[in-house]
Length: 216
Ligand code: AMP
Image 1 (cartoon, rainbow, N blue to C red):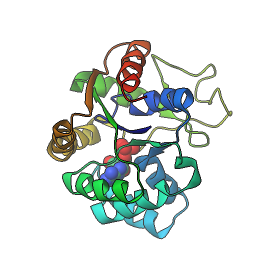
Image 2 (image 1 turned 45 degrees about the horizontal axis):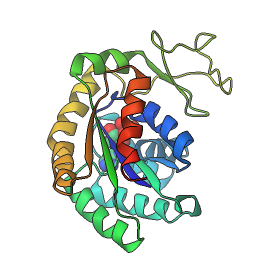
Image 3 (image 1 turned 120 degrees about the vertical axis):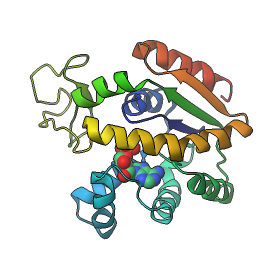
């Protein structure tokens, strides 16, 4: 299964991706996570990406395209992929059509999660993540058992630097201007399922499963 999951910051892409990868056994490839790992390890790519990321701006297309092309050739992508946060611009979408064709894995389904700004703001400011294992929490709706500590691995929970209202506004504007045309691009191919991401997580996932059932 070759799937893209899209939606603004805080729409639930990470949470839904965890559920999808468990149910369908395909790797969850988040370009944001890959970049953050590079920043943590202080690689050349990380050094380049850091300034863009901290400003809530997009990292240049050619850098991202090369990173994704390389990642999709890893053996764990044999059964397909769940790409999260890519493509985010029309240039990336067009480049990805060629990459996907080259590796024989064209996009089959695009899940577009839709959520309004106020809900996103509430989610983003309360979001806490585990830098060790990637688990995602929310201080009100999904708190860990012990405050500040990951239930899964005991890691110390942190807040992403870009999870602020100010950055959310920048990221929303970026999403609207750059990513909306990407959804329109895939709409023409008839592969987009729009899902209300403000619903309870079980309902959102049920609707995703229904959409993916069409390509299984
Ligand atoms: P995310 O975790 O998906 O919200 O991504 C965090 C940040 O990483 C974004 O604000 C961008 O700076 C960068 N980023 C992630 N994916 C991409 C992409 N496909 N194109 C450009 N920049 C990206």
